[in-house]
Length: 410
Image (tube, rainbow, N blue to C red; front, side):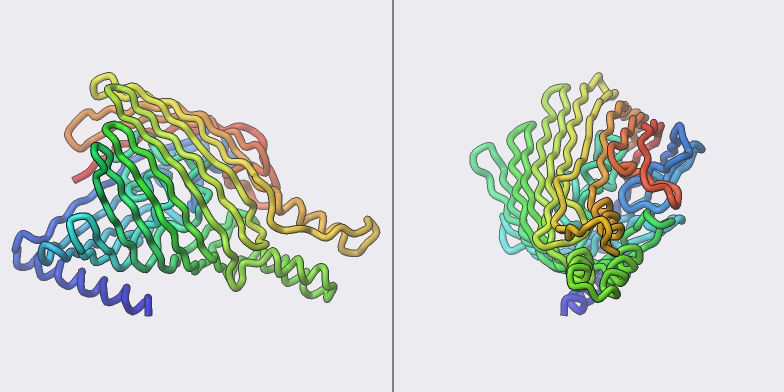
């Protein structure tokens, strides 16, 4: 039913947009955004990538890390109803640039304070979820991977409801959402592979804006289901094949087949006061039933000062393990499964990473911004978020990432 609703919404919106473009009735608006960027690191021993990117950046200049192009069309049917479609071209789970539908919804205005959207919307899990791919709308070159790599769900097919109200000088927005997220996940271990997930998800977000200050709290819950996760499936199938009850239970705890319940809670703050720019987020990823995915805490803080059209900034980001929801059986060293259980304990340890970065944004022309940024990435456990060569279990050397790019909107 949800797939049928999404298809109906998309067909209606795209059909009317096409008619509007032909008729030129003024109800169709088309906009876009993009980044043309280049990046390299000081080492080719491990690759640096954004979350869910298959093609990491090494010691030769590459354009795939930050470059993207987005196009958006909105058609206004009447004062209450509109439709929006957005597509985004970027490097994600493929080695090549691909184009995906990131937004595609019908929006109905119930009254001056409340609206409902039906279709595909970006999951509002983060402070800048709505515009995290729009480089021009962000101070930094890219959202810190330490934070934005902790939630694998980017958008969902379903519905959300938004309520906005002013309490004196404070504007409050409350958003509730629910649907099913479908997409691909890049699995960097074992030489790299791609798995598909289908995850029912729901949650809420509250945002308060007062002058130059914005505060936000979001909570999302999902039943993450991945049935073709090759490395984990091979492990759980092997455990189940032993016919040992403890191993069978461990296999059931580890797997994502059939779905496992997890949650993501985030709080974010921004300030743009006079020439001072601040941005910070803190988040927790938690499991609500046994699953191999480790629990984590993550956060970052960014501070900048604007000198006319030039904005230098500094940020520190991190993520670290909070523990595991899986309990591995304890057996004597001579037990036939002792080595396997030991390997599973190692698997359940979360990667950890810290980064310090400095950068500069220069708004040198209308709708154009030049950015340069240097990240000092320090993997703490298991190589952090770096993509390691096949067969390399961990990596502990720091890597510098040098990037420059031009953000634009039109």
